[in-house]
Length: 480
Image (tube, rainbow, N blue to C red; front, side, top):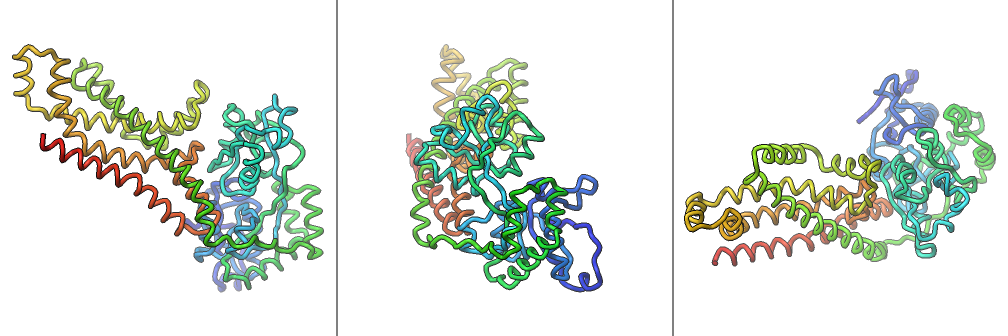
């Protein structure tokens, strides 16, 4: 998706190739957001920085929409010249790509509920508790680093709204994020306080392909010039993010005392082994969610199928509505409703909400399998059973169910394999299952090749034995 950026362009700029820059408008102000007056355009301080760089290069800025977590990889692929969207300067990013000098210094701040203002002043005070943040960020790295010492539980989110709504709702005890994000959410949501003492400081940078060092050097020169002439300061003041800390940082940067951070030693071949325990733990969560959800789906599916076959017209109609509504709406929406929408009534733990959401969703599909299997039993057998004096309950238990189970086994197995893969969706409600942990791994090393292969192998190791067992059971039953 390409959105236009406002601004006059000279003839030279129009003749030069556009300066394509990537960002995520979903991140919102003050970074990048769709202009409310014209949603085809974007605005924010990263937008203005991109325009400054483009003008300095004699080119016209052109925005490319990309998911925040994919910006660095897209830059390396050459989808655009530079990524600018609150990208944090992290050692692992410097290992694999060219980064500009930092153009903004932020503070990692802790947010807590007002009642906990005096109790949770630092991360150490949150020992043994749940602390929320965004995945693949400096804050997330800090929490992981403190986890062994403090025994706290980092809770990773894909957006910067739900960490604070879950803090207000009591699902987490603290949120660690950039002060810009924290102050923005405080203005829009309220209901929490920001502790004054920062946990750490970090910097926003532009990210370019590793081979694009020459452009990086040109961008650095432009950024320093814009620091000297006050253009960056005016942009940050416009978006209300300028403060004394930023002024001090600019003074050091203009004096050329800001240098690129030295990268950590390459992890290379050891990275897969270091992440493997986390992937195995995440696979255990995936297995637990899948089996519990399938058990719930089978029980509710049987109840729904029996109700649609034996129930009164009202019962059959109500159950039919349930099945069609559940099958006709995305499971992702259902998870959001159960976890976030119902939080005012009942605050379900994320794991339990995941099990209930997937279980109730798949119950609708399972019920159709069981209903079709029950109705596939020849009517002559049912009439013969009634002639022999069997009750409807006995007919269901002794005649219908044994035969229906054989018919339903294959599609049940297919549904379980599908549920195993759909369990990846529960990451949106903060459950770090196998796919989410793989995404964190891939983001940290800047490649999906090794993480993707490992994830696929784990999924195959889970699903193939199940499929083989079901086929063996099906063959065995077909001989009896």
